[in-house]
Length: 102
Image (cartoon, rainbow, N blue to C red; front, top):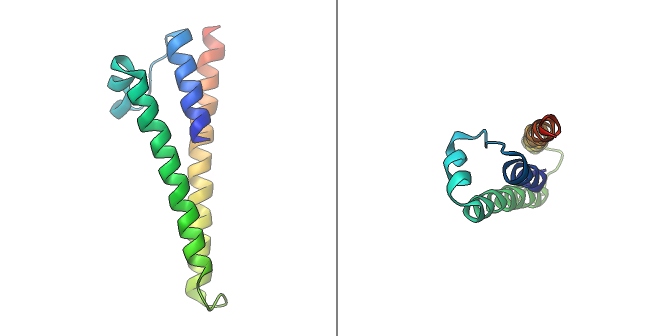
């Protein structure tokens, strides 16, 4: 979803004159799309690696029947679902902006 957010943002900016909605990245998109790309895709990769590492670390827990393990797993999965939903919303918003510009 992170890479789809990047792609739809780039398409919207380059071909349809859209503007990045994130105020921290909006100025960067107007000055350097390659820098924006590095930041956006690096962030996507880092978050993905963090989720992967957290799951891998959690699964190394010897007592998977412990309440703390179950709570941590629920929290990790909820965080994953929330992050995915937020990125899905961003991608859908980008697609709506592009379709309206056509």
